[in-house]
Length: 119
Image (tube, rainbow, N blue to C red; front, side, top):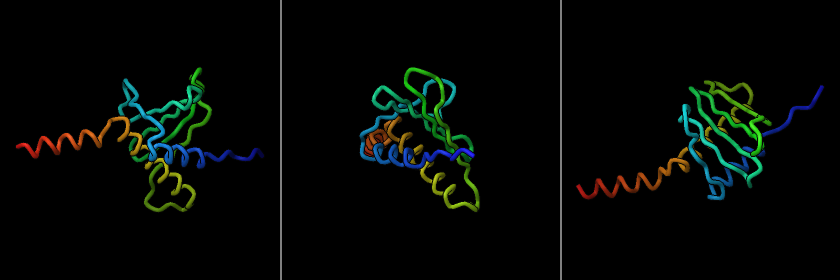
């Protein structure tokens, strides 16, 4: 049997680098407004998405549309496997942070607060 690959470390590093401002995320234009992507050194593209109660992440080479890996976790009331819960939390945090960065939400909220202060 082939040993499964572990993607948790990659997802964790993406989250860490996004938190520190070293990765720039963009909104995917088109039919899916719930998907965001970043380019890693013009070699790989990572996409995060949300659909209903699921979060996902995939990786593609920059020069191809071939998906090298895709992971997805769905929220459960009770996670029987702690590893799945940990991955769900990691993916949901990465998605939310990528969304905030891509949509520039902190600056927009600050602008709205200033506008409201003027009223």
